[in-house]
Image (tube, rainbow, N blue to C red; front, side, top):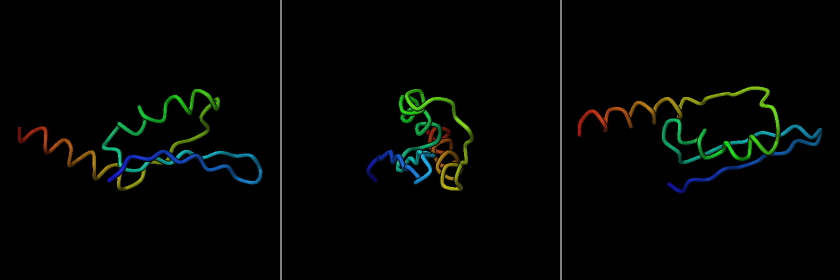
Length: 64
């Protein structure tokens, strides 16, 4: 899967960053520069996919 970062801007000016294709905390590292440019973060919502991928990555590390 390709890694993408989407910046969604609502009509009221509120912005949301969505990352796709990243494993575990990679998404935070990849989007940090955008968050710094936009200013203070008002919240974070981690998806079930984030947690599933993090578990898979951890399992893969343990197997090697």
